[in-house]
Amino acid sequence: MTARVFVSLKPTVLDPQGQTIRKALNAHGHPEVMEVRQGKYFDIALGESANTDQARATVEAIARDILANPVIENYRIEFVD
Image (cartoon, rainbow, N blue to C red; front, side, top):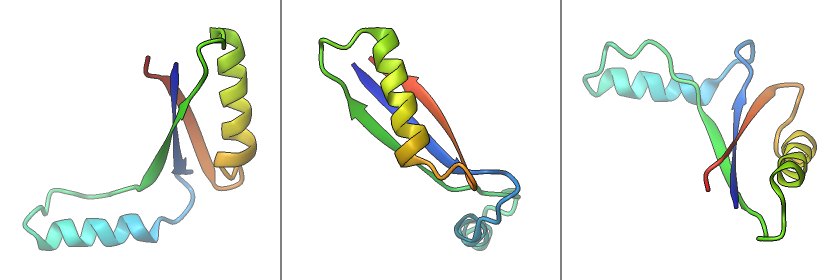
């Protein structure tokens, strides 16, 4: 079983990297791009013995406590297989 954790800045947090990417896209002929928000994701492979509820709780704790800074970031979890 694999969990994918997406981490991104909260909408109220300034994203200078996203602004730089938007400017580059505009300069490369994509003036329709109005905003870019950057983020990251983590793929976490779990052992075969983990049941779905246990896996969800484990990944939730990892995302909340380690992968995301709850002051400035949101996270979302998907199970991909």
